[in-house]
Length: 369
Image (cartoon, rainbow, N blue to C red; front, side, top):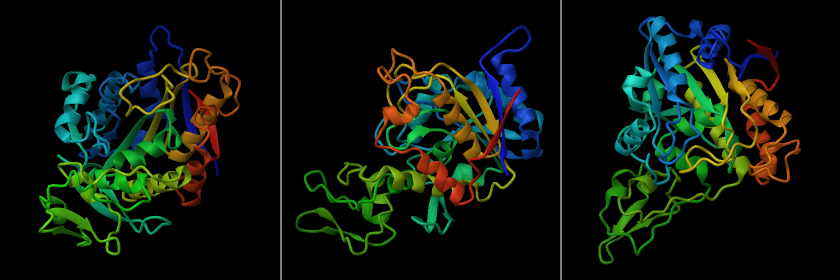
């Protein structure tokens, strides 16, 4: 059965701004039914990396905060720390970056909570029993929230083709160790020239696969015991256990979907999704820059089905003619815009697998509001 996806275009007029359209989408998509008085409501956003300007404007998020409060809910804005070392790898830097990018209390009227804690160790093991993972590591603040609004900037991504609701839910809600597991199929290795033998990695290894050679004062990982959980990688203060990005795009997409299943497992009938198809940059907002948009600004979509929402979003982008002064230069008429930019990342796999595991349906009714 097709899912309903509600769409508001970019046109604004007297007494109907784009901000007003966010309110209308919230109501038309049935999101008032998601929130009960007293609910702790996580608004999953991406605060943008320092230097990035493509993230969703906080004024749009404020409208959703207002909606939650009007229903008696208690909203907070949240995102999990990043795996890579940038301006959001720990909660202190992450909050500072969010504030610099305009997500202040005065603007959004809600507190900011980093979902997986100070250094990415605050998470919950959620069983999923799927192809790649038996369980996933979901950031605590998102797991323990009573309801969830996923607010995503729809754009390109080098690993998965495009980033929308599914990537925001799965990759965005995983702990730092979970992000390593999604990004890599390779077991970690110690760089002896950087290792000081401090032993901090041992404390966080659930498989007891790490020891320290007393003579060399170097950590050693037993590959036979290692389960590839990524905890040592994010724990090492000297970056002696390097982050591995070695994976196949289709595998990473499936892993992200499995994390999305984990996020939504305890949010049945308590989750809603928005995609903002504006500033459709070719790169993720994790980049420290924002390249020129590949198509014109299209509008805002909302649905209770994240798969239908992403499918509708990519379809709308693909119907557009690419902008000539963008990374699509020379390929403006390409049928698959994200495929033209990232030919090695077949974005369809994330949608197909998401439908296979019951996350949602690719079939939708697009309803203009």
